[in-house]
Length: 318
Image 1: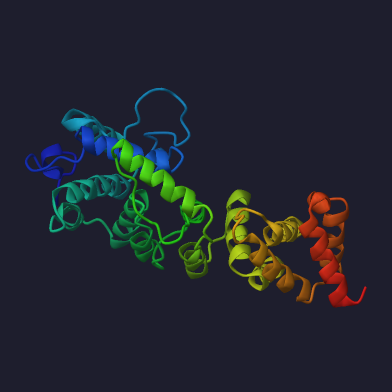
Image 2 (image 1 turned 135 degrees about the vertical axis):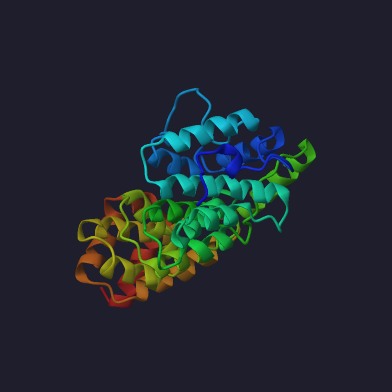
């Protein structure tokens, strides 16, 4: 069996290198686009090699800088007090970088997995996380939605998919010229007024049904559901949300219905959502929450919120 503690047994000595200055710059650009943390950072943190939220000025282990940095990271991985499979998983991720730099026909990562006996579920997980870090979300979900995987990173995956949902734009940012950057900024300004597509996030959630650990992730998921379907959001509140969170989520649903994030399309969208919510069979508690949200809550200064309450009263004959 492969002795992965030997650097030369794992990494190639010839061919393109993924951690030259251009490769490191690309990875750091990707990390910046994810608010400073990649999934490989989380994995390294789990191995005790890095705290994902570290605020120190020291360079992070990943990406390694050049051959010397890669050798140092390899030694850190091999010295970590974790299982051999955990160590091999990180080496597998690093070899995916090498495969990416070499060609689509390179299979260094899979060869390592075969030679070292890395179980398939570890390979599936790390390849999925690698695609997440590359902003290749559809490819990532082909792996991360596999039933053999634990839900260890489910909160983080879901949060990233919701935050980075867009109108079909799942491409990675590149190092580019000033003119290219200006064009990207113009595209981003146009995209902020488009209805976001949460298909990937919702497909991932409905496929694996994770027990969410983070209230922040729950709120992000619910916002995606509410912006996609008002009736589905109400069902979510009643059947899936923790009881203590239901009023807060119902108020969040109202906020989504009346939100004004898109000055060019919000009026028609708000009217449509408002009609849906006002005509749904709300419970007495939900009717009370709506009235209190408008009279004493966040909606008291919103004309749209008052209009929504009036529409509800017309429907119920109150």
